[in-house]
Amino acid sequence: MKVLITGGTGFIGSQLAQRCQLRGDEVVILAQENTQAEKENTNALAKSGFTIVLGSVCDEEQVAKAIAGCDIIFHLAAAQHEVNVSEQHFWNVNVEGTRKLLNASINADIKRFVHGSTIGVYGVDMQGELNEDSEQKPDNIYGKTKKKGEELVLSFKNKLPVSVIRISETYGPGDRRLLKLYKGIKKRRFFIIGDGENKHQVIYVDDLIDGMLLVAEKDSALGEVFVLAGDEILSTNNIVEIISEVLKVKKINFRAPMWLFYLLAVVMEKTLSPLGIQPPLHRRRLDFFKKTLFFSPQKSSELLGFTAKTDFKTGSEKTVSWYEQQNML
Image 1 (cartoon, one colour):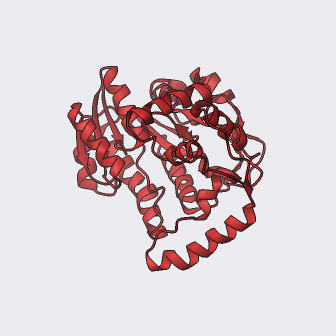
Image 2 (cartoon, one colour; image 1 turned 45 degrees about the vertical axis):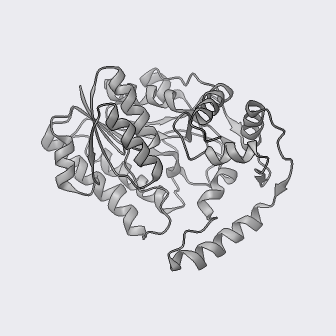
């Protein structure tokens, strides 16, 4: 099989690319180098023999070049963490870029189109166990445009063999996003904002990729939406305690009030963003301490046979080992 991975220089995309190569697929990556980590991943992937097309999903010429001869598409490219950009940028990438890729897929006779979405489409106000049919109330521009992207993909299900995956918080070797958390805990500088009882259902990257490959293979996945999450429901307190145990450090018991940090985030966004300065603290960064999201595994289990295998302690041990090998921790 020839596989195209958009956003393939990112954490999940680069790990997926390596797995596909291991199983014998020819892999093409359409991606950009917006961060130092993406540049490092590009270099490593190029040395491993991957075909890399540097460009945006908004560029029809680059999309056509990357998609030629491909059988399967994993669409992971997205505007996500950018702060000093207009909201239109998110619409351009997450919706119109997806539309360009879908139209090109019809012309290229793509056999499977797997769209990477996010649990962010549910928003921060949803409580209790959720599933694929739960109401979506995205509270930021990323979640809103990813929701619209999902709807767009599913509107093509009579023209293309499409599936949507909502990806939970993902960690593992190769991840830089949670590196600050591990560093902060190791140096005993990390403290919890709020009561720490909000819930997470994180997923180890290898388990996520298992699920993604099942979605690309199973006929039962066609035209469907799946949440891919880990097997454990953990509070922020649980996560910090487990990481502290893995790192063999004593966690800090100090807690800061949420209202204070939320107010600071709003002030920084209002004053710094208009000046083109990325705020050191913004409201989306507080989601880790605010959101309570956990999910029923019923649909992914029954239709895909998917079960996450890696508990958070084991996954953290592997993640810490990778950080130490890279001299990051």
